[in-house]
Length: 226
Image (cartoon, rainbow, N blue to C red):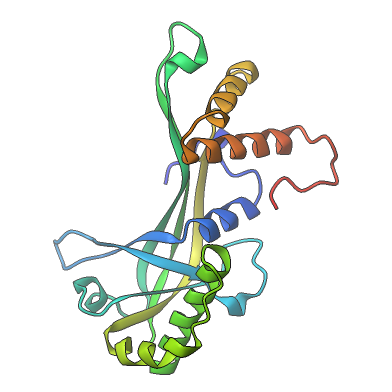
């Protein structure tokens, strides 16, 4: 991914938070010779065995897909892959700038994780990937559902589940949040998004505010990303 210097993440925890908060990734790997690449939307989590993650580089990710998917049959030990995680994004109309001339653009956040795919053959390890995924998502997005009574059901459908690990080798991240604009114009964009009825715009506004705090901290002891 081409990332101009001004749009690089301010510090390593930003991509970690984006991946954790937007876990439905586009997983891309090579297809048949002379054929198009495979691309599948899949839920991907950070391996709980990694402990508290502050940097994605070198960690392991866990995912699963339907074994009936032709993509699964193309995965072998060490298959190169990219997982694309997309975060908050929003269109920026020139009307917000209050400038003329001006050009429209799109503010967005994205993390491209490069790595190697490793299929998991063990049924018990595959089951643990499913269980770990449930724990991660229920803890962050769900209502605290107790999966205990459904584990036997998980075992029944497990033959159709293709679980895998992604060994991360490289991470590219881009946080395009109007850094190219003058401070007063950038603030107009942030305030416009913050007052929107659309959740994605408000999320972009919150990130813009965090970025401003990172660049101009009121208290240097504070961390801009919780």
